[in-house]
Amino acid sequence: MKFSARSQAISPFLAMEFGKRAAALEAAGRSVVRLNIGEPDFGAPPQVLEAAAEVARSTPLTYTAALGLPALREAIAGFYLRAHGVRVDAQRIVVTAGASAALLLVTAALVDPGDEVLVGDPSYPCNRQFLAGFGADVRLVPTDASTRFQLDAALVRAHWSARTRGLMIATPSNPTGTSAPPAQLRAMCEFARERGAWRVVDEIYLDLADGDASGRPAPSVLAFDDEAVVINSFSKYFGMTGWRLGWCVVPPDMVPVVERLAQNYYICASTLAQHAALACFSPEAIAVCEQRRAEFAARRRLVLEGLREAGLQVPVEPDGAFYVYIDVGPTGLDAMRFCERALDEAGVALTPGNDFGESGASRHVRLSYAASREQLHEGLRRLAGFVRTLGLGPGSAA
Image 1 (spheres, rainbow, N blue to C red):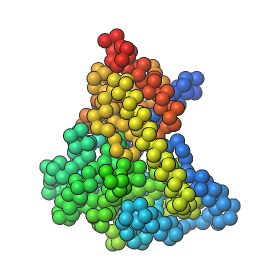
Image 2 (cartoon, rainbow, N blue to C red):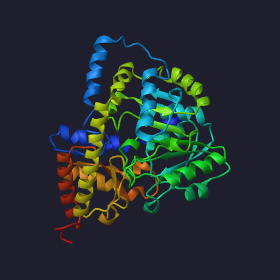
Image 3 (tube, helix red, strand yellow):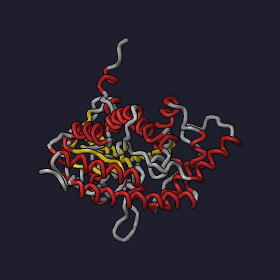
Image 4 (spheres, rainbow, N blue to C red):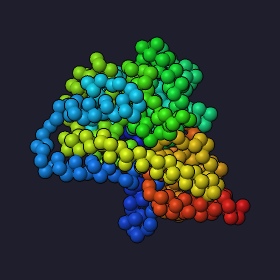
């Protein structure tokens, strides 16, 4: 059987590959601390679980409209107003089968073969795989600690070409957990808009981001660029990873385009998940999610302190999501070898930076602190011991 060139060009998702290796070790009787996957350990809020049980008992689970339940689209619009002070017409909100399906629709709607798209490096690999799958020429723009591993206006200007048709930004970012400063995000969007280019902003981790000095929540790009396309999900802030439910916000003239695509690509998002997700926006469920956001901030502090004590460097402290991007260069190991040995010798699963791009990838490792505090304490203890065997850290032989 001959497979498409597209399928052959896609690299394995290393976070999942290391997950498979961890599972094999566990099956063989080894204890493994999994810090490789960005999956909150809390699960969905109790209110959502209760709603799902009631819906399963009482509601015919037929197809919904391709754009999603009207009530859920209205609820998401209300969330933007309450959480971010942004008025979004519910008719612009498209409920999708996870953020991945939102990216599928948006990419299919915007990208023609040969279009150049600027994407920061490092960045979430699936974003660029969607772009490349529809024929885009993905131009990875190297970033580093000086820009918090984020694109900024100067980088966008420097890498823009006559072929550039769009800009994809994730803030906060996976794998670094860092956000683009709002002023820089605004400047990048204005620069692209002036040139007739589209802007796709991945805000999946927005509601896990730190507020500003006055306590105001991190702003959505929609606060200053009403024509930007926004990707979001129920997976992270609401803890609903396996429910496969997300959404996008698109300009009005794009709604019928993505509706046609959704009808043909997957018909609609899960009816059960959509009905249950209405409970996400109850005051009780939001209170639960806010408590969990505070817990993630506490876990971040725990992890940063533990890594410092272990002698591992974090070039930029995260301000959102639940990731830390570690520079393992001083250990003398590249990222792949560090992750392989940390798993085999210490029983800690991490993700090598090679998953996320090219610039500095071989010296960086992503740690997810979406695991419980108990798992984090144990994982950090094991990592500290492993680093000591490399001749680094307190108590090493170096």
